[in-house]
Image (cartoon, rainbow, N blue to C red; front, top):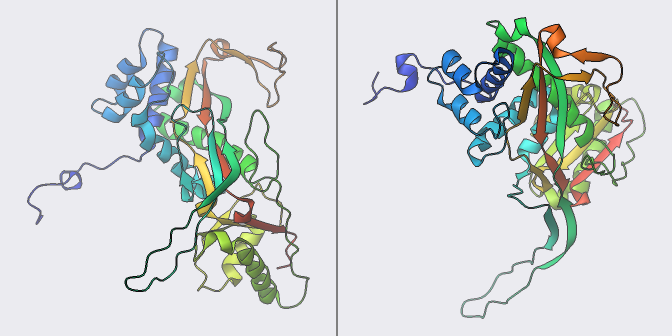
Length: 347
């Protein structure tokens, strides 16, 4: 070692993945709900002595079994978004866009801004004053992803709990994000609009023997549509699995745009997005509640009147603990000119 002082890796200390504090805090909340005699903080000191990040997450809780908002958890929230990237093109796309914070506001306005054009000025010549003009644009209001799942007592108490909980959090959230973000669904009281909403798809090039030429023609059309916003780069391609494979095999290697894959898209679909025009608000760590006393309707479409329909599921009877995840997340495109897409491509 040639350094004047040792780094953690020099003495055998490795840095834990950034999602680890959230996963471990979830385990502590779940085990405290099952043990009943302990608080999550006590469980954390027993299981993960010395892990200050876990204690930070747990101290942020309003109740004894809840993770909630605190500015100190911004990096953990970002880590959760980053961890979804392998299963969610939407998470990857939001991570490349502009990140904002509500900071207590009920909504965020994103006005359209016409940037004035600068020009050259001669020596000693007065510099002209130009004015930028604004107009009403998109706005972002708070929304959330929410899901309930359960783990058995054996799973929570096992030595593999950390890996199991991590996968539950990822699998429960990633596909839900893609399903809404990469859709043409209009905004509603419970969700933001999909980024394709209100944007007509372009017509793909007609079929023919030269697949590579068709691909280039379609990508040129998509790029031309978003170029005024993307400028010299900032274009991200999001494609269905079949189209993504074709893009990686046939697109010239000199094109360095990221290619993201999402199974939520219809076959032979490709989207071009100017990442600098996608605005996301992902400002809090996911809120996790745990209970062993909960009873709920185990259905992907539960009745809305609050009654417990069939199948009725009791955590106490099954020796299980229920985990409820609520993740505040919203987004909007600053301008519809930042996105172009087509489906039914012939390559």
